[in-house]
Length: 448
Image 1 (cartoon, helix red, strand yellow):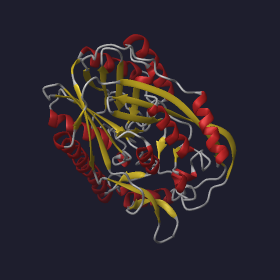
Image 2: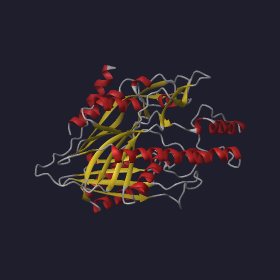
Image 3: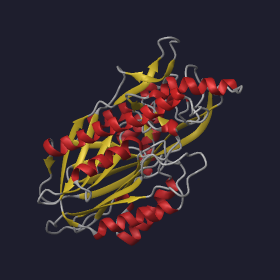
Image 4: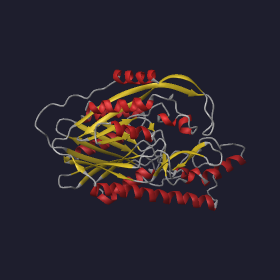
């Protein structure tokens, strides 16, 4: 254990990317601009998609304090490819004067968008940032938190088999916090809201239709409520072990799909569910359950959206004086393993050593707000530990940001030993990642 933690700290210090010092001077006026671009692939759908349920977007906001800039990007997408982040961040630094350490590009992790984004997305992101810069206007920043009950821990012991499985664990670790950063004009007109919540975007997954899922739908709800000029950016909190609280795919739809595949001689009872494939969509029961999935997505998006609006109305603390904008990046490295057997849950995995695997970290300061970023899918307990140990009141963790770690899921230390798919398929050995992430992010934040 100690050797692993030391390894993580040494890797962190060796790859630390410090921000450029901001020149001294009189306090400058903060300015902000935001943009939203629809990038729904209506005319070029992948073959495994049956249509479009709702539109998907690239959203951005740029902050400028007269000395430097910060860019925040939120994409309705399954993941943030590392190569895409590197290309966009290099061009944003050169063309738009946004340092790479001060650009956060986050994927919502919707499972209803192709995980491999095509090359056009790079230009769309840069276009969105340019539009945000063109709309810069005097602004102020405020912060608040609320609570939403729409997530639940998904590491549960099956009451029938006494094995771990993906089911609602009402007693498990779950962070219900909705963190909200509001950016508006000095007169109080909303420019953008950047909000963070830990929930997997998996509700319409069996429909095989393009969808922004809960994050995209909640953002549209907030934007409708604030007026179309405002832009709402969702970032995924530590949702590695968090599902929507009502999620039928774990129950009847999964049972129907298992039975359909079994008739063709294929056992998927302990395997990754293959989307909505294998279900007879003319079956009245299947059709009803899929329609209910659409409706529950609308319900949960309204609940999350209303909590964001509630915080914006009543629970904000305003930043005062000059707003500092600073960022830093690092990576931490942990011992890796490779699984040699199969099975989604219930049986202990077998592994061989597989060298080291890196986790990308970042920290961004916007006035009194500190955003820690991780390029993987992190368990909720790790983000809660970060918020306990960080010396700053306004702290959040944005995951699936600035790349896609090759770790698989990033379980908390206490989760290892649970034979559920997120732990079984993690490439990480126990005892390193949690401390490496928390200590690394706290160190970066202190440096800002």
